[in-house]
Image 1 (cartoon, one colour):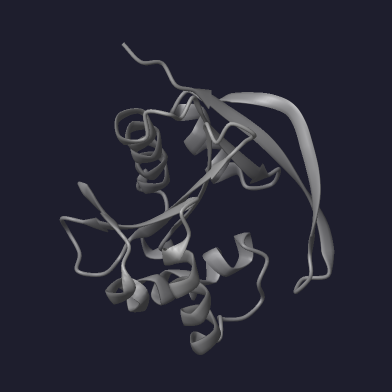
Image 2 (image 1 turned 90 degrees about the vertical axis):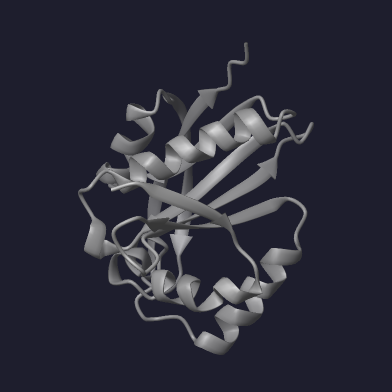
Length: 169
């Protein structure tokens, strides 16, 4: 399965809504029910206007439906770090799509965002799939941790930071 990435625009909202309504995506983003479509659309349109966040939809050559999404957030004191967030349609779980999405994040950051020096991922410690994705792509595990409160689930969880240092030739 070959993936194609498109920078999101307002016309991609329905696909984004499908992905964010996926049961696994809801779980890993700390939600226990599908998003309110009107509220999510308002949030989505606001995100498209941000200069420090890039949104992408991933499609495959085997399906008409979206298979994943990716956020690239520009962070750091010098705005030289990308933090990623991604999700895969659960119908396509286990096919290596998360690994391909992270590979795209690295390649895009290296080739298009030449001011970026590293790509970081904060991953819930029990999200084994995402941990495997970043490790397969050459990230290093760090000792940095942070506790987050998932309000809708009324629990605290620990996130661990993984870092990929960009090398340019």
